[in-house]
Image 1 (cartoon, helix red, strand yellow):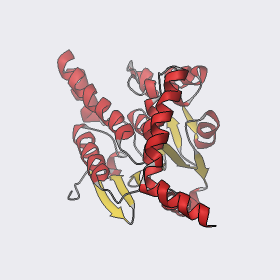
Image 2 (tube, helix red, strand yellow):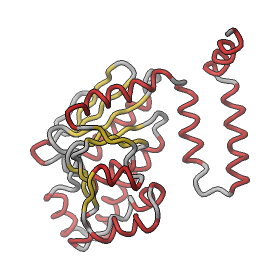
Image 3 (cartoon, helix red, strand yellow):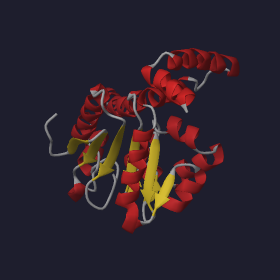
Length: 254
């Protein structure tokens, strides 16, 4: 995929780099950005050599949510048009979970509204200490509706309720404490720490990570027994992979 104005895509080693490229608009989301994000994720998913995807924002902010033009379009559109628009964002959130390898958000600055939803939808979130997270939609009568299914699975019910209905924002340390963020790194060392974190995917089995991601999200909503049975199937599949066969041989030869 050629680099576009709004989303940049490149590959460095075994990591796909996807960058929101609207720094002058705080990387705000619109129809084009969402379409390009989906295209970039699909390209990454088709690359058999990749171990992970790193999603970042150009400039000082990760993503500030929908841009003014998108909000104006929402206010002027019919219910059918708004349903189609919301469906497109839903498809992006679902796609992130369907990409076989981990999708990691590296958050600098603000991740607000749809931008916070985008980060929350990723498998892992790394944040600068100065980053801010929040869902201010209720301040304008809007509902952070689609991300709710994801947020509810990341934090406690009471914390989710507060984040969704107060309209405020929280700092990275608080986001880590409640389970919205995996790790917080000091601003001056953020890039190096993120690079080191991503390199960790080189030291684990690609097939095992892919199977783990699929199973973890696949058991969501299953009964305990159904989840265990799904684990049996994945366990058997993992045993037959080349990575597992080689790993067992190395272990036995020690």
